[in-house]
Image (tube, rainbow, N blue to C red; front, side, top):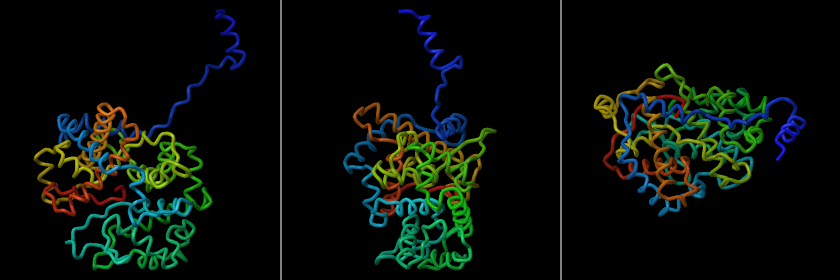
Length: 362
Protein backbone atom coordinates (compact mmCIF):
# COMPACT_ATOMS: atom_id res chain seq x y z
CA UNK A 1 0.00 0.00 0.00
CA UNK A 2 1.34 3.41 -1.02
CA UNK A 3 0.94 5.47 2.17
CA UNK A 4 2.40 8.58 0.56
CA UNK A 5 -0.28 8.43 -2.12
CA UNK A 6 -3.02 7.97 0.50
CA UNK A 7 -1.69 10.97 2.40
CA UNK A 8 -1.68 13.01 -0.81
CA UNK A 9 -5.32 12.05 -1.52
CA UNK A 10 -6.42 12.97 2.00
CA UNK A 11 -4.85 16.41 1.67
CA UNK A 12 -6.39 16.85 -1.78
CA UNK A 13 -9.84 15.98 -0.48
CA UNK A 14 -9.68 17.80 2.84
CA UNK A 15 -7.03 20.44 2.21
CA UNK A 16 -4.19 20.95 4.62
CA UNK A 17 -6.57 21.38 7.54
CA UNK A 18 -6.86 18.47 9.98
CA UNK A 19 -10.05 16.45 9.83
CA UNK A 20 -12.38 17.79 12.51
CA UNK A 21 -13.84 15.46 15.10
CA UNK A 22 -17.46 16.17 15.90
CA UNK A 23 -18.04 16.13 19.64
CA UNK A 24 -21.46 15.27 21.01
CA UNK A 25 -23.02 17.93 23.23
CA UNK A 26 -23.09 17.15 26.95
CA UNK A 27 -25.32 18.47 29.72
CA UNK A 28 -22.58 17.72 32.30
CA UNK A 29 -25.29 16.61 34.73
CA UNK A 30 -23.74 13.20 35.26
CA UNK A 31 -20.28 14.69 35.68
CA UNK A 32 -21.71 17.16 38.21
CA UNK A 33 -23.32 14.34 40.15
CA UNK A 34 -20.11 12.33 40.29
CA UNK A 35 -18.17 15.37 41.51
CA UNK A 36 -20.75 15.99 44.23
CA UNK A 37 -20.72 12.37 45.44
CA UNK A 38 -16.91 12.32 45.45
CA UNK A 39 -16.88 15.43 47.67
CA UNK A 40 -20.01 14.90 49.77
CA UNK A 41 -19.73 14.62 53.55
CA UNK A 42 -23.40 14.24 54.56
CA UNK A 43 -24.72 11.89 51.86
CA UNK A 44 -23.19 8.55 50.86
CA UNK A 45 -24.03 5.67 48.53
CA UNK A 46 -24.07 2.02 49.58
CA UNK A 47 -22.56 -0.24 46.91
CA UNK A 48 -24.00 -3.32 48.60
CA UNK A 49 -27.55 -2.01 48.54
CA UNK A 50 -27.24 -0.60 45.01
CA UNK A 51 -26.40 -4.10 43.74
CA UNK A 52 -29.43 -5.53 45.51
CA UNK A 53 -31.72 -2.69 44.41
CA UNK A 54 -30.68 -3.01 40.78
CA UNK A 55 -31.99 -6.56 40.64
CA UNK A 56 -35.18 -5.73 42.55
CA UNK A 57 -35.94 -2.71 40.37
CA UNK A 58 -35.30 -4.50 37.09
CA UNK A 59 -37.46 -7.50 38.02
CA UNK A 60 -40.25 -5.21 39.26
CA UNK A 61 -40.14 -3.17 36.05
CA UNK A 62 -40.29 -6.37 34.01
CA UNK A 63 -43.23 -7.67 36.05
CA UNK A 64 -45.11 -4.40 35.51
CA UNK A 65 -44.07 -4.24 31.83
CA UNK A 66 -42.68 -0.79 32.52
CA UNK A 67 -42.02 1.11 29.30
CA UNK A 68 -42.85 4.35 27.51
CA UNK A 69 -46.40 2.98 27.16
CA UNK A 70 -46.82 3.40 30.92
CA UNK A 71 -46.73 7.19 30.57
CA UNK A 72 -49.83 7.44 28.39
CA UNK A 73 -51.74 4.88 30.44
CA UNK A 74 -52.59 7.43 33.13
CA UNK A 75 -56.06 8.84 32.66
CA UNK A 76 -54.94 12.47 32.91
CA UNK A 77 -52.02 12.39 30.50
CA UNK A 78 -52.93 13.43 26.93
CA UNK A 79 -53.60 10.60 24.49
CA UNK A 80 -53.38 12.38 21.12
CA UNK A 81 -50.02 12.29 19.34
CA UNK A 82 -49.91 15.76 17.82
CA UNK A 83 -48.50 19.27 18.23
CA UNK A 84 -51.21 20.21 20.71
CA UNK A 85 -49.93 17.45 22.99
CA UNK A 86 -46.37 18.74 22.62
CA UNK A 87 -47.55 22.16 23.83
CA UNK A 88 -49.52 20.54 26.67
CA UNK A 89 -46.40 18.69 27.87
CA UNK A 90 -44.30 21.85 27.62
CA UNK A 91 -46.81 23.76 29.76
CA UNK A 92 -47.01 20.89 32.23
CA UNK A 93 -43.26 20.65 32.76
CA UNK A 94 -42.77 24.40 32.67
CA UNK A 95 -44.83 24.39 35.88
CA UNK A 96 -43.70 21.01 37.18
CA UNK A 97 -42.19 22.01 40.52
CA UNK A 98 -42.75 22.28 44.26
CA UNK A 99 -46.00 20.45 44.99
CA UNK A 100 -45.35 19.50 48.60
CA UNK A 101 -47.59 21.00 51.26
CA UNK A 102 -47.27 21.83 54.94
CA UNK A 103 -51.02 21.29 55.38
CA UNK A 104 -52.74 18.03 56.19
CA UNK A 105 -54.24 15.89 53.44
CA UNK A 106 -57.71 17.40 53.89
CA UNK A 107 -56.65 21.00 53.25
CA UNK A 108 -53.69 20.58 50.88
CA UNK A 109 -53.98 22.13 47.42
CA UNK A 110 -56.36 19.96 45.41
CA UNK A 111 -58.24 19.98 42.13
CA UNK A 112 -61.65 18.35 41.73
CA UNK A 113 -61.85 17.00 38.20
CA UNK A 114 -63.76 14.16 36.54
CA UNK A 115 -65.26 13.06 39.81
CA UNK A 116 -61.94 12.75 41.64
CA UNK A 117 -59.75 14.95 43.82
CA UNK A 118 -56.21 15.34 42.52
CA UNK A 119 -53.17 16.64 44.43
CA UNK A 120 -49.52 17.36 43.71
CA UNK A 121 -48.29 16.83 40.16
CA UNK A 122 -51.59 15.25 39.16
CA UNK A 123 -53.37 18.32 40.49
CA UNK A 124 -51.39 20.39 37.98
CA UNK A 125 -52.26 18.07 35.08
CA UNK A 126 -55.90 18.07 36.15
CA UNK A 127 -56.15 21.87 36.27
CA UNK A 128 -54.61 22.17 32.80
CA UNK A 129 -57.16 19.72 31.42
CA UNK A 130 -59.94 21.54 33.29
CA UNK A 131 -58.89 24.90 31.83
CA UNK A 132 -58.87 23.53 28.28
CA UNK A 133 -62.37 22.12 28.79
CA UNK A 134 -63.45 25.57 30.00
CA UNK A 135 -62.21 27.07 26.73
CA UNK A 136 -59.11 28.72 28.23
CA UNK A 137 -56.07 28.20 25.93
CA UNK A 138 -53.73 27.58 28.85
CA UNK A 139 -51.23 25.58 26.76
CA UNK A 140 -50.77 28.35 24.16
CA UNK A 141 -47.59 30.47 24.48
CA UNK A 142 -49.23 33.39 22.63
CA UNK A 143 -51.85 33.39 25.39
CA UNK A 144 -49.30 33.56 28.25
CA UNK A 145 -47.30 36.27 26.53
CA UNK A 146 -50.28 38.65 26.43
CA UNK A 147 -50.92 39.83 29.99
CA UNK A 148 -54.00 41.74 28.84
CA UNK A 149 -55.82 38.63 27.63
CA UNK A 150 -54.09 36.29 30.04
CA UNK A 151 -54.32 38.40 33.17
CA UNK A 152 -53.05 37.37 36.59
CA UNK A 153 -56.66 37.19 37.76
CA UNK A 154 -57.55 34.77 34.98
CA UNK A 155 -54.55 32.63 35.90
CA UNK A 156 -55.72 32.62 39.53
CA UNK A 157 -58.98 31.17 38.23
CA UNK A 158 -57.10 28.54 36.23
CA UNK A 159 -55.01 27.55 39.26
CA UNK A 160 -57.90 27.63 41.74
CA UNK A 161 -57.95 25.00 44.46
CA UNK A 162 -60.81 22.95 45.83
CA UNK A 163 -59.46 23.61 49.31
CA UNK A 164 -58.32 26.69 51.23
CA UNK A 165 -54.65 26.18 50.29
CA UNK A 166 -53.46 27.98 47.17
CA UNK A 167 -50.99 26.65 44.62
CA UNK A 168 -47.43 27.02 46.00
CA UNK A 169 -45.14 29.61 44.35
CA UNK A 170 -48.00 31.02 42.27
CA UNK A 171 -46.18 34.23 41.31
CA UNK A 172 -43.12 32.24 40.25
CA UNK A 173 -45.29 30.05 38.03
CA UNK A 174 -46.76 33.12 36.35
CA UNK A 175 -43.24 34.44 35.75
CA UNK A 176 -42.25 31.13 34.13
CA UNK A 177 -45.28 31.29 31.82
CA UNK A 178 -44.60 34.89 30.78
CA UNK A 179 -40.90 34.27 30.15
CA UNK A 180 -41.45 31.10 28.15
CA UNK A 181 -44.31 32.66 26.23
CA UNK A 182 -42.15 35.53 25.00
CA UNK A 183 -39.25 33.26 24.00
CA UNK A 184 -41.39 30.74 22.13
CA UNK A 185 -43.38 33.44 20.34
CA UNK A 186 -40.33 35.49 19.35
CA UNK A 187 -38.05 32.63 18.30
CA UNK A 188 -40.18 29.53 17.63
CA UNK A 189 -43.47 30.74 16.16
CA UNK A 190 -45.31 30.02 19.40
CA UNK A 191 -44.74 26.30 19.78
CA UNK A 192 -42.21 24.06 21.53
CA UNK A 193 -42.47 21.73 18.53
CA UNK A 194 -40.22 24.07 16.55
CA UNK A 195 -37.57 23.99 19.26
CA UNK A 196 -37.68 20.20 19.10
CA UNK A 197 -37.11 20.38 15.34
CA UNK A 198 -34.04 22.58 15.81
CA UNK A 199 -32.52 20.05 18.23
CA UNK A 200 -32.19 17.61 15.30
CA UNK A 201 -33.22 14.42 17.14
CA UNK A 202 -30.89 15.11 20.08
CA UNK A 203 -32.36 15.00 23.58
CA UNK A 204 -29.15 16.45 25.00
CA UNK A 205 -29.10 19.34 22.52
CA UNK A 206 -32.71 20.11 23.41
CA UNK A 207 -31.96 20.15 27.15
CA UNK A 208 -29.03 22.50 26.55
CA UNK A 209 -31.16 24.73 24.32
CA UNK A 210 -33.84 24.97 27.01
CA UNK A 211 -31.28 25.91 29.67
CA UNK A 212 -29.53 28.41 27.40
CA UNK A 213 -32.62 30.22 26.15
CA UNK A 214 -34.98 30.00 29.13
CA UNK A 215 -33.57 31.06 32.52
CA UNK A 216 -36.43 29.27 34.28
CA UNK A 217 -34.91 25.96 33.05
CA UNK A 218 -31.32 26.94 33.95
CA UNK A 219 -30.96 24.63 36.94
CA UNK A 220 -27.30 25.41 37.68
CA UNK A 221 -25.68 25.85 41.09
CA UNK A 222 -22.33 25.96 42.87
CA UNK A 223 -20.91 23.18 45.02
CA UNK A 224 -17.42 23.29 46.51
CA UNK A 225 -16.49 26.15 44.16
CA UNK A 226 -17.58 24.19 41.09
CA UNK A 227 -20.60 24.83 38.88
CA UNK A 228 -22.93 21.86 38.94
CA UNK A 229 -25.83 21.22 36.56
CA UNK A 230 -29.04 19.36 37.38
CA UNK A 231 -31.51 20.49 34.68
CA UNK A 232 -34.34 18.52 36.27
CA UNK A 233 -37.26 20.17 34.51
CA UNK A 234 -35.52 20.48 31.15
CA UNK A 235 -34.66 16.78 31.21
CA UNK A 236 -38.08 15.61 32.34
CA UNK A 237 -39.71 17.76 29.66
CA UNK A 238 -37.69 16.03 26.94
CA UNK A 239 -38.27 12.64 28.58
CA UNK A 240 -42.04 13.18 28.79
CA UNK A 241 -42.19 14.01 25.08
CA UNK A 242 -40.14 10.88 24.35
CA UNK A 243 -42.41 8.71 26.51
CA UNK A 244 -45.67 10.20 25.26
CA UNK A 245 -44.73 9.67 21.60
CA UNK A 246 -43.05 6.30 22.28
CA UNK A 247 -39.79 7.49 20.79
CA UNK A 248 -41.39 8.42 17.50
CA UNK A 249 -42.45 11.62 15.72
CA UNK A 250 -41.84 14.55 18.11
CA UNK A 251 -40.40 12.04 20.59
CA UNK A 252 -37.67 10.61 18.39
CA UNK A 253 -34.29 11.22 20.02
CA UNK A 254 -31.11 9.36 19.11
CA UNK A 255 -29.48 9.98 22.49
CA UNK A 256 -32.31 9.64 25.02
CA UNK A 257 -30.13 7.25 27.04
CA UNK A 258 -27.74 10.15 27.75
CA UNK A 259 -30.30 11.81 30.05
CA UNK A 260 -30.06 11.23 33.79
CA UNK A 261 -32.72 10.81 36.43
CA UNK A 262 -34.58 13.96 37.45
CA UNK A 263 -33.26 15.19 40.79
CA UNK A 264 -36.30 16.04 42.93
CA UNK A 265 -37.60 15.40 46.45
CA UNK A 266 -39.59 12.18 45.76
CA UNK A 267 -37.07 9.75 44.26
CA UNK A 268 -34.59 10.11 47.18
CA UNK A 269 -37.33 8.74 49.45
CA UNK A 270 -37.39 5.49 47.48
CA UNK A 271 -33.59 5.34 47.32
CA UNK A 272 -33.23 5.83 51.09
CA UNK A 273 -35.90 3.20 51.73
CA UNK A 274 -33.82 0.80 49.62
CA UNK A 275 -30.81 2.00 51.69
CA UNK A 276 -28.93 2.89 48.52
CA UNK A 277 -28.51 6.43 49.82
CA UNK A 278 -27.59 7.11 53.44
CA UNK A 279 -27.53 10.41 55.31
CA UNK A 280 -25.36 11.72 58.12
CA UNK A 281 -27.15 11.79 61.52
CA UNK A 282 -27.32 15.60 61.40
CA UNK A 283 -28.90 15.73 57.93
CA UNK A 284 -31.29 12.88 58.67
CA UNK A 285 -32.48 14.56 61.88
CA UNK A 286 -32.98 17.83 59.98
CA UNK A 287 -35.13 16.10 57.35
CA UNK A 288 -37.13 14.14 59.93
CA UNK A 289 -37.88 17.39 61.78
CA UNK A 290 -39.37 18.86 58.60
CA UNK A 291 -36.93 21.76 58.54
CA UNK A 292 -36.28 23.66 55.33
CA UNK A 293 -33.16 23.08 53.24
CA UNK A 294 -32.33 26.17 51.14
CA UNK A 295 -32.19 25.82 47.37
CA UNK A 296 -28.60 25.63 46.15
CA UNK A 297 -27.19 24.84 49.60
CA UNK A 298 -24.52 22.18 50.13
CA UNK A 299 -27.03 19.76 51.63
CA UNK A 300 -29.46 20.18 48.78
CA UNK A 301 -26.74 19.71 46.15
CA UNK A 302 -25.59 16.56 47.93
CA UNK A 303 -29.11 15.15 48.01
CA UNK A 304 -29.69 15.84 44.33
CA UNK A 305 -26.25 14.81 43.12
CA UNK A 306 -26.33 11.54 45.09
CA UNK A 307 -29.74 10.68 43.63
CA UNK A 308 -28.48 11.16 40.07
CA UNK A 309 -25.30 9.15 40.59
CA UNK A 310 -27.15 6.42 42.50
CA UNK A 311 -29.62 5.86 39.66
CA UNK A 312 -26.73 5.83 37.19
CA UNK A 313 -25.05 3.10 39.26
CA UNK A 314 -28.31 1.15 39.35
CA UNK A 315 -28.66 1.49 35.56
CA UNK A 316 -25.13 0.24 34.98
CA UNK A 317 -25.64 -2.74 37.28
CA UNK A 318 -28.88 -3.69 35.53
CA UNK A 319 -27.18 -3.65 32.12
CA UNK A 320 -24.20 -5.55 33.51
CA UNK A 321 -26.33 -8.33 35.01
CA UNK A 322 -29.05 -8.32 32.33
CA UNK A 323 -27.42 -7.53 28.97
CA UNK A 324 -30.77 -8.04 27.27
CA UNK A 325 -32.18 -5.00 29.12
CA UNK A 326 -31.19 -2.60 26.34
CA UNK A 327 -34.32 -0.46 26.71
CA UNK A 328 -33.67 0.31 30.36
CA UNK A 329 -32.34 3.84 30.85
CA UNK A 330 -32.24 6.39 33.67
CA UNK A 331 -35.50 7.94 32.48
CA UNK A 332 -37.54 4.76 32.91
CA UNK A 333 -35.84 3.95 36.21
CA UNK A 334 -36.75 7.43 37.45
CA UNK A 335 -40.36 7.04 36.35
CA UNK A 336 -40.53 3.74 38.24
CA UNK A 337 -38.89 5.11 41.41
CA UNK A 338 -41.16 8.17 41.41
CA UNK A 339 -44.29 6.04 41.04
CA UNK A 340 -43.02 3.76 43.81
CA UNK A 341 -42.51 6.73 46.13
CA UNK A 342 -46.09 7.88 45.50
CA UNK A 343 -47.44 4.37 46.14
CA UNK A 344 -45.47 4.16 49.39
CA UNK A 345 -46.96 7.49 50.46
CA UNK A 346 -50.50 6.41 49.60
CA UNK A 347 -50.08 3.17 51.55
CA UNK A 348 -48.50 5.06 54.45
CA UNK A 349 -45.38 2.89 54.38
CA UNK A 350 -42.68 3.57 56.94
CA UNK A 351 -40.05 5.77 55.30
CA UNK A 352 -38.09 8.94 55.75
CA UNK A 353 -40.04 12.06 54.81
CA UNK A 354 -38.92 13.94 51.72
CA UNK A 355 -36.60 16.88 52.19
CA UNK A 356 -38.20 20.33 52.10
CA UNK A 357 -36.92 22.87 49.60
CA UNK A 358 -38.97 25.61 47.95
CA UNK A 359 -37.76 26.41 44.45
CA UNK A 360 -38.79 26.41 40.81
CA UNK A 361 -36.20 23.75 39.97
CA UNK A 362 -38.25 20.75 41.17
